[in-house]
Amino acid sequence: MIKRGYAVDARFNLKNGAGSDAVHATPIYAYAVCKLSTDTNLEGVGLAFTLGTGNTLVCEAIDYLVKYVAGKDINDLMADFGNTYKLMVDDPNLRWLGPHMGVVHLALAAVVNSCFDLWAKSKGEPLWKLLVNLSPEALINTLDFSYYEDVLTKEEAISLLAAQEFGKQEREKILDTGYPGYDTSIGWFNYSDDHVADNIKKAMDNGFTAMKLKVGSKNPDRDIRRAQLVRKNAGDDATIMFDANQQWNLSEAIAICGRLLEFNPYWVEEPTHPVDIFAHMELVKRIDVKLALGEQVPNKIVFKNYIQSGCLSFNQVDAVRVGGISEFILISLLSKKFNIPVVPHVGDMGQIHQHLVLFNHISIGHPVLFLEHIPHLREHFEFPAIIEGGHYITPQEPGSSSSLKNY
Image 1 (cartoon, helix red, strand yellow):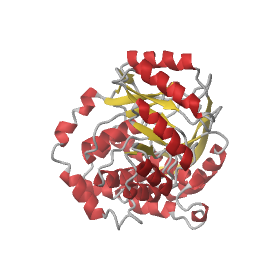
Image 2 (cartoon, one colour; image 1 turned 180 degrees about the vertical axis):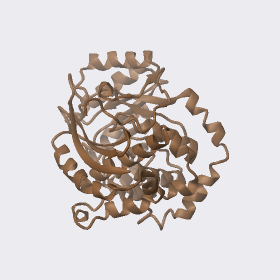
Image 3 (cartoon, rainbow, N blue to C red; image 1 turned 90 degrees about the vertical axis):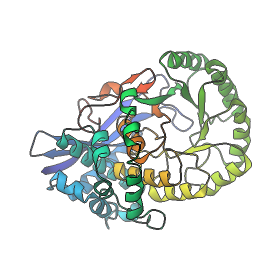
């Protein structure tokens, strides 16, 4: 039984330019944490990711939303979680602040993620195993299909999952090999050229064959110089991505993406405003570039529109940005219907998403690409994600790997 829920404010200063991008010069990585205490020794822990001061607001919203899950048995709650989710997301006192985005939606993510964490712990299983072993009907009952009925019904989602039973055993081999990662940390925005070059060598020595560079400089020539440096040092066979963190208007995005094509990018990430769908549509009409989006896409509706638009090549839905694991799975199912691969942004540092990409591949049939790796907070987790040879080692501890030390 869930006795009560409450918020915890956890913030971590980064050093020496780590985490910097074209927007955040000196970021503070922060989690608004939801904790669910029970009448046993089990505790549910759920994360929402922020970048500092906003954590206070998200924590206040968490303390309000937990009333929807307090006093309930976790297994009874999760058997019909989609309805509880809808009650929380449509709370009449908070919905006006969104709807379904911003501070309230981040708080919802933390509450939802704590419920999934507690559910897995109550079964004594890692989250990936719990999700993979659920029947299609049981999984679908954890989702809220509101506003998705025109593109993905419950019945269609159940059929999609049932169809993936064929080949599931073969796809479970990923549990032994580990899910591939890509290194985001080679090229933070404030890193010097020498630092980037050193990081590329270290990443490749550690088994990474894919890596990402932060772009979006006021002078685009700096971006081009750094992109050339990465391609030269990583070699022609490396997979390279560029992330602009929404810095360009449409005309700038067209011009600079055109120049970046010289370096054969696997994708360009967030080239312009994250919810300007028409700008992204126009960009791919004008430039033959693949786009990755999702870090700042706030909810399932904007994802729905992006998926329908034809401009999205890689879906970066993040379970600590949208309304938690439940909404992540719904968006992932729709992405599968449209044959768009899911490559999550990891505001959680890959802790939860190492579970979700395994589920995506084994149960939904998404292809194995790679999962973003950012190691800067690993020392603060009780069970940090383990990377060996450029692969995430399959987690075995019960839960979603979200528990923090000293919080």
